[in-house]
Amino acid sequence: MRRWATLLLVAFAAEGQTAPRLTLTERLRPKNLEAVRQQRIRWIETRVDGVPRGIYRDFRTLIGMDREAEPEIARRALEAGFDVLLLASPDQLRRPVEGDVTLLPGSIQGQSLRFAYRNRDVRLALPGQEIGSTASGVAIHRSDTDVGLRAARFPNHPIEAIGATVDRVDAAVEAWAATAAARALAAVAVTDIRPKATVQSLRATSTHILARSDRPLDVLDSLRLGRTYVAHEWLSETGNFWFRAFNGLGIYEIGDLMPLASGSQLRVTLPVSGRVKFFRDNKEIAQAVGKELTQPVTAAGAYRIEVTLPAGGEDRPWIYTSHIYAGAAPAGLIAEVPAAVPDDIGFQGDVAYGKEDREKLDLYTPRATSNFPLLVFFHGGNWKGGDKSRVRALGIALARLGIGVAAPNYPLDAPEAQLNAARAAIAWAREFGVKAGADSERIFLGGHSAGAQLAALAALEGLTKQEIRGVVLASGIYDVRGIEFFGSTEMQWSRFSPIFRDAKDASRFLILFAQHDLEGFALQGQAFYEKLRRAFTPVDLELLPGETHVGVILNASGENAALVRAIQRFVRKHD
Image (tube, rainbow, N blue to C red):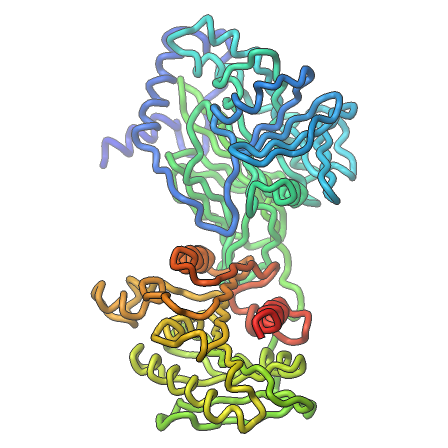
């Protein structure tokens, strides 16, 4: 351990310092090229490549200026490992192509690149040009694939020879960052594509776009919102890289605005140990060396990072991110539970559905209708807390839209008792809900957070499509392995994990998660969605834009609330 610490200090020089830049001639000396090669090999051997942990996928993108519209470029981009190719030429090319590589053609317009598709229009300013108010992004690095010819002169070190030309373009970075401190502005890299461009020269520097999918609309939307980072991947792959902010409200990705709250932090995850410089409003505020780093966020501003790696006796630029913005939390970010139920809906409080103290529910019903659909919706609270009053805003909003809501409390002492209570609440709804005007053939089941796990488990405990019309799950946990409340063995955890239950003959599902959910919740929803699809269970997966984990349920007041709209669409579709 002591030897590793010594090596790390030697590699990075003293903490807070960086090694001076070498000249191109110095970098191309055989001894230096071999030293860089050996360092790259060590990173390949020790690199940790992970999987995406947020709501976005990381698409390696080649943004190219192809003045000759070479037809082979898409094939070479695929060979170079790109997912998306934004290819600008003097004349607009053919329509977008979606396949192994998503090809989105664009045009070169003066000193900028323009990519347009349907109602999206994105302009990227080239280095050294006026950015302007209409630019969605700025090229902070511009490379030329002719450097591949230089690599041919160094057959033993072709990648290192290409990388020798890569430096931080100070003026371009500073100009972009100054404008991006005030508004979302994507940092990108642009490549001048020459005839017979080599695969190695194409992939030397990449733009990474964080998007929901590689469809053209999603790609352009992420560019407009500044969800990008630039990586000099000749040096090392960026697999397992993640830069995000978090606090008690949720997780915020590149391009997001995080409301300042207690405990707000930036978090950086790297596949190899690097030197990370943290910037706020284009001023360096801290730097540190490691693979997992955090930085407190105590003031409003635009936050970004730059990462360097030690190679050949100097710190080489590796990653530049676009910004995460932090600002004061807006008033009413998390709504209060309504103090009372309005007179325009029906309400019965503390209705007993079982014998235990907490086996009581609140019933919200439309006043002017009968035979309405009824949603049994379980509250959250980490399985050990919470109350049915959390569902009050949702109950009021849905009742006004003609959907009844039964919001049960349930025991907080044991998972088996919770499951038994859920069964009892569903049975009550089917038998006694009709007395309040509900249609026993149109019973839906749902829950938020811990309540979503309970609803999913109950739905897979033998309930058929005839008993439950559909299941709505918001920001839930579906694999409880490792959670002490459910036991300490794989058998116990599997017993209460919906993801391990048989979904044969199950009803249809709608799985929802918040854009700024707590860590792990989005991945849990996606994994459960895939499990149900493999079982041929009808299932939809939806993102609730702009919502936080707690805000999903507490902000569910009015027909325009994200959760209310999603449930209304689902119920009407399958009613």
